[in-house]
Amino acid sequence: MNLLGEIRRRARHIVGPVAGITLFGYFAYHVIQGDRGLIAWLKLSQQVETAQLQYDETVARRTEFAHRVGLLQPQSLDPDLLEERVRSVLGLVHPDDIIIMGGARSPTAAHGKAPAAWRGVEPRAGPSYHHHL
Image (cartoon, rainbow, N blue to C red; front, side, top):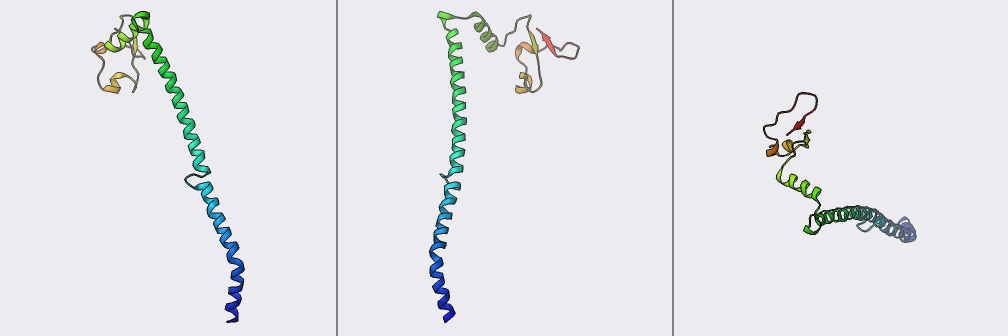
């Protein structure tokens, strides 16, 4: 019984520091790894930075589109931009235009069907696929 009493007496002196160290370790772990810890804060900061860059790009694109739309207004119609849009929307090409068809980025590869303006055009002999329409 003397041995058991000695263990209890010494355990009383150890329980406080062990409990304190355990609590400190628990909170220290959650300060670093927790849902609102340092690592989560760093990831969130990186996401905010990425979102800010995307926002800035979107604002720049919107400003560019607003400018282009302004050029299409009847009061300030830009003939070059009008011609570009007409060609794009209607699929028209000028007889002097050179059309270069590439791999996967060509409209034929992307949609499985060539635009109406390109149908029936055979590639010229040679290493490149330049087309005159």
